[in-house]
Image 1 (cartoon, rainbow, N blue to C red):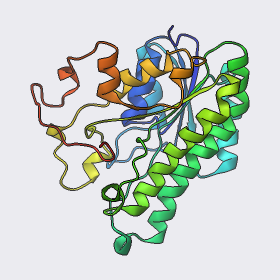
Image 2: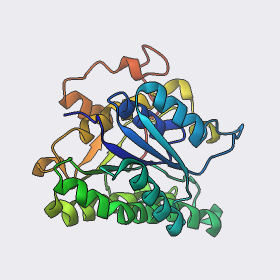
Image 3: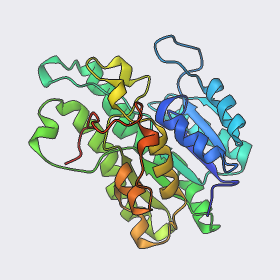
Length: 278
């Protein structure tokens, strides 16, 4: 199974992990809906929906750049309509867009709390709800419909909450969507899973967080390859839905154990660990 001719609606695909997943799917000849906010270049965060579209086409896929803020219900619904008009439907939704804020309660302004929860938890729920009618059609047509949330395994331990309760709540909100929607959509034949990295991933957004050594990170391509394995698995197989995958564990299960090519620094064996992985 591959992704040739499949249509993927990927939030936050203008750069980083979302773009890497898009490029991997494009190599099969997939159609990619780039649902992201950035339409004008920003020196702080390189990449726009239009530059992403160029990369996706160069990789072998079709691209539809759509400027959309996933906090805006009407904008999301309009993006879904545009995707259907352009490509005839949606087979896969990748909820990748996310906001981060690693501050404690005393130092988290409510504006930041709202941003994280509106993008992470609410945005994931909204995009899933908006795409669901098309995903149901895809599943009914035997096109292996899937939802993939870029969110962590649920681990209700104090040390994952205490340093940044607001961020953890928002990110776990995405994972709760995986838990609930996997059960809710099982009868339709739509698989719903989460994917999360064991290590920090070198992205432009990560550079904005003080104290992170990018040389001790892995590249977004490790998540792209892991996502590909999920999205090409049989959505109707019970074991392929409701999972909280960790990138290197999933790759190893498929026989990919030499992960050096994903290291920012070749040969490195000491990585910055990501949050939420016990």
